[in-house]
Length: 111
Image 1: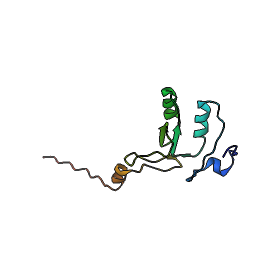
Image 2 (image 1 turned 45 degrees about the vertical axis):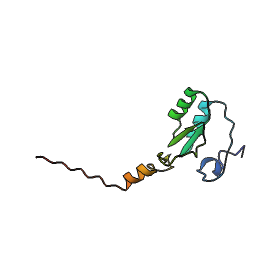
Image 3 (image 1 turned 30 degrees about the vertical axis):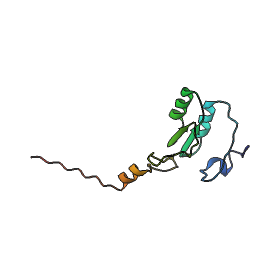
Image 4 (image 1 turned 90 degrees about the vertical axis):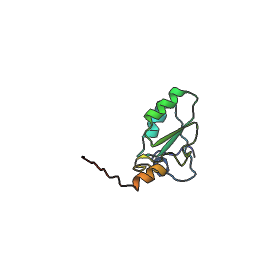
C-alpha cells in the first residue's frame, strides 16, 4: 500500500501478515526517525551497499534485530529472536528457551 495515513491503525501497529506499507523518505536520518516513531520494535531490514549506512542503521534503529540486505523476516533457528518496546520481552530460540527452563543454583564449598 502507498499513501497510507500515519494515523491509520495499519500504519502504527504490529502487523503479522503479508502487508507492505510504502512511505516516501528523503534520507537515512528521516528513515531512522520514522522507524523509531512507533511503540513496537521487533525486526527491521535495510538494503545498502554502504557499510557506514548499515552500521548507522544498526546503531540507531531501536529493534530486536536488524537484517542488512535481507528482509526483516529472515531468521535461522539458532539466532535469538525477539523485540524491544511493545514487541516483547526477552528472546526466543533454542539457547534462550533452555535458559528460561533452567533454574541455576550456586553451590560454594569452604573446605
